[in-house]
Length: 55
Image (cartoon, rainbow, N blue to C red):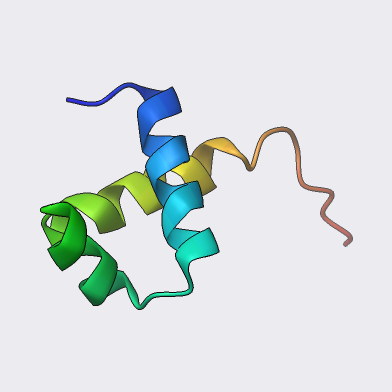
């Protein structure tokens, strides 16, 4: 399994490439499901802290 830094770097390269996720994954030899998991993990961990709730 790739480290968090490797996942973030790969997702960053994809975003900068301008390619569709499917096309990028095919070029890099990554399954779309694995790549989607990486994106989800990165997005979840960037949402830290409390969310204010208004009554």
